[in-house]
Amino acid sequence: MSSLAPHIEAFLREHLARHRAASALTCDSYAYSFQALFEFAAPRLRTVPSALLLEQLDAPLIGAFLEQLESVRRNSAQTRNIRLAAIRSFFSFVQHREPAALEQIRRILAIPYKKTDTRLVAYLDKTETQALLDAPDPTRRDGIRDRAMLHLAVCAGLRVSELTGLRTSDVEAQCKSIHVLGKGRRERALPLWKPTASALRAWLAVRGEVAAPEVFVNARGEPFSRWGVAYVLQNHADTASLACPSLRGKQISPHVLRHTSAMIVLQATQDIRKVSLWLGHSTLATTEIYVRADPSQKLEAIEAVVPPHLRKGKFRPPDRLIALLRTKS
Image (cartoon, rainbow, N blue to C red; front, side):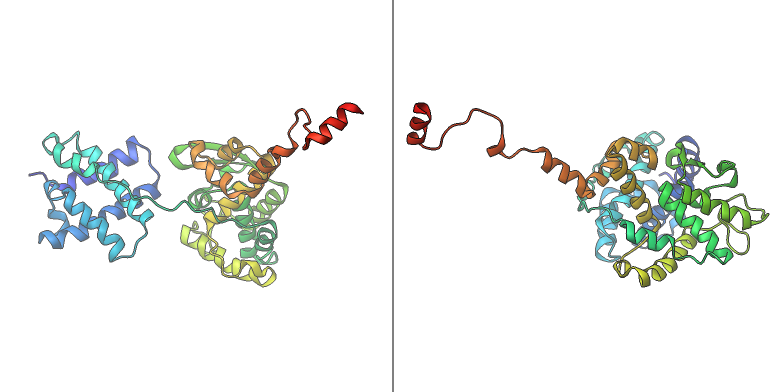
């Protein structure tokens, strides 16, 4: 019998953090998945999470856990798949450490993902985007900060972890570009639009000397959390909805601003590769969701197709009599 705790610790601290160089957000997501699994399994097995054994986590138990996520906790199929991905990743790691459990692990790895609906990404149009960017009060210190934050989120299409983790040393001297360390430790340099550069310079001018190296800090000089960004964004979205009614009822999250940035770049360049580079995607397949969401792409396809009755070719009269008259004329 093999204790589960040492394997989990090795997976999170060594495999994910060191060998795979996973971000802190990814490690936290995996840890939460295991926490939910162990809190489900322990009462069923009449033990405590710290006393769980590897052999006790078999395919039927994992299947019951995944079923409980949807039926009891009302999680979506997408959330279920995220939890399953963490579990499968862990057992792929363990199979090299515990060869005796290969048959048990093989059955767990065979648990399939659920198919999910492929929905169009949510994004803001030009009017909505401008209303949101204009919402912060430029006469207040926090308004100057929030204005720069929103401009940067829309312009650079940053993930919320990239936005909160951006340091003053990552900003070019004249605020014309930034250096971003993204998901999977992939680096990219992004030029900034003039309004964004101006908003960022205004914030750095009033930010003051604080101990935290991050660009965006709260009133106490502490770095912003992802929840802090979401809170600020929602407040300004509510303000912007007064000037732009179409924003009312919309779920506006930091990732919606990232989608908005992607759509702006796609519509400006018509090049999915440039969108992928801008967002820091590892593959073009990830970026294809924006092509599906852009109606202009479909319009171009329609315009490129020539209706059959307009295709070039030899003219044929529709009637024999007309054909005869044409030969006699």
